[in-house]
Structures are given as structure tokens and as C-alpha cells.
Image 1: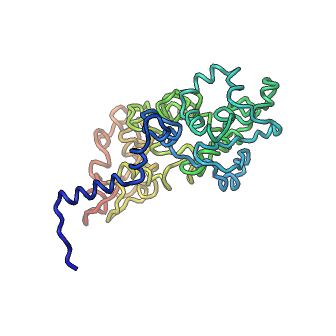
Image 2 (image 1 turned 60 degrees about the vertical axis):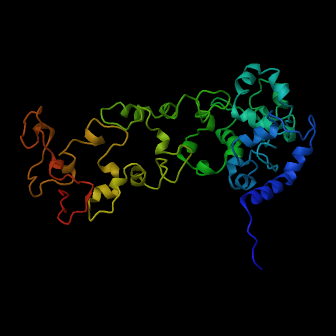
Length: 371
């Protein structure tokens, strides 16, 4: 059967007719002004819910597998439509009383949290969640707390001096934020030290542009505990963290990882290669300490030596290459220009003057890394 050629105008007419006959188009044309199906520029609760980020609320499998998540109820849920009400182990008989009851006393907290993403999420799903939306989705049922506000443990509190344990506090947060970057939280060094989510995050106030952090930036949050590491960035050679060009989370995952220093990759070298890809290789001639661990020669947070070195050259090299071949005597800081016994072999010179490709060489004549 021979196909009948169609002109462009005829084809355009057919496509236009099909679009107008589509169910959605017919419904929109048929809906009179003011009807529930009439198009409106105002955002509905469902529109807000679609704009909010996706979560894994109701991840019952994760809760059942993790003992720290047992405080969260196992009711089925869909994103934002049925936020689970966590169980308070210290007030097992408490019932939900609704957000209006909480606001009657906590007016300041209500003002601070009204613009936050968490409250916007719960309000978007309030039609199916019920009166317990917002406050009790995190703090648990509040009937016992309403009867006796000063009773310790009557509500799930997110502070260090509260009766609520850090495991229960983290379990509430992981009820919605389980998985992803937080899949290794259980057993991580931060979890073992008794930290909870609110030690780094503050969902009740907007103190940071993103991440509901407790301080203005990630680096400030980490420096709260890791002050010794933060001080290293003040040394003359340092990563560009004080300049705002990188953050602690570029290398570390504070929520847990499979490595002890909470690296985002499997090894230190893989983390370094993320930016320093030219050092990855493979090389025809490899330098064993370099291939083993970058930290053998570099202090990644900051150093007073050039290029983040842990010791000045040639003292760094002579930690391995001592009394062999041409470095026939041990060089010490006393031989530097400002030392007690200045040595012309050290003044303004170093091993890297000749062994320039110290990370590895692909030159057939470069087994000594000088090419």
C-alpha cells in the first residue's frame, strides 16, 4: 500500500486536533470559571508537596533492621502525607494533642519554626496526617508534657542535658532521613561518642543558608569540636578552606562512612585523587610511600612547610633514604641557613631540585624520579 504524502500544514492540523481532544485539555476547556477544576495561579498544598524534596518516610525495613530506629512508629507513610509520630520510651502512655496545644505555650518556637522546611513539609501533608502535624512529628505525643511541662522525659527533647537519650533523638531524625549519606551512621565515630543530629543541626531556626545547620557554615560546625584541626588551617600552607573554596564535607562524611576518619571514599589516596587526578597514575616507576598513603609526606589540613609537607626537605626524604649513596650523611635543621652549622648542600636546595617527579615517573629513564 503506497503511503499518501501529507503537507506540513495538514500534519500540523492533525497534531493540533489530537492535542485539543486530549482528556486533560477537554477537562480544562469544559471547567467553568470558579469550579474546583478551573486553573488557578494560587499554590495548593499538593503543589507545595511536589516542590519539597523527596524523602523515605515510612522506611519500615530500615527501622526494623536498626535498633536505634525502634523509637519510631511503624505506621505506613508516604512523603509528607503521614509523618510518623515517634514513640517516647519515657512516656509510653502519651497521646497526640495537636500543634495548637503546643503553640499555646511555645509561641516563640512557633515563630522561629514557621518558615523552616520541616514545618512546611508537615503542613503540606496535614490533610492526611491530622492535628498532630508539625510539633509531635518530631517531639512525640505531648499529652503527658501538657499535663506536667516540667516533668523530665515527658516529651522528646533534643538537647544534651535532656533525659531523652541521643539514640532516641537520632532515631527520630532517621525516621525520615534514613539511608543515603546516613546509611553508615550506626557504629560511626560520631554516634559512638554520643552525638545526636541536633549537635550539628538546628531545624527550628534558619541559621545557615542550607542544611539547617546549627551555625552559619559546615566548617564552623565541625570546628566546634575539632578545634585542633581548625587551627591547622591558619598555617602558611593549607587547603583553601578559610578562603571558602572548600568545606570539610568535600573529603569527610560526618554522618558516617566505612573508614575511621569518615572519608567519603575508601582510602586517603582516593580522596586526594578527587582533586589531584594527575597524581593518580598509573606510573611506569612508582614511589612506594606515595602509592601507600599521601599522609606519609603531607599534612592535608595545613603545614608550615611548603606544599603541606610534614617536614622540610631533605629531612622528610631522609626519613627513608639515610646513609645510602650520595646522601652519605644525615642532614639536620642545624645545616639550614639559620642553623648552628650551615651546610651549602641544604641552603636553597633540596632533593626535589633533581628528583622533580617524586610522585611517579613515566619516563623510561626515570627510575630515580628525576625525569
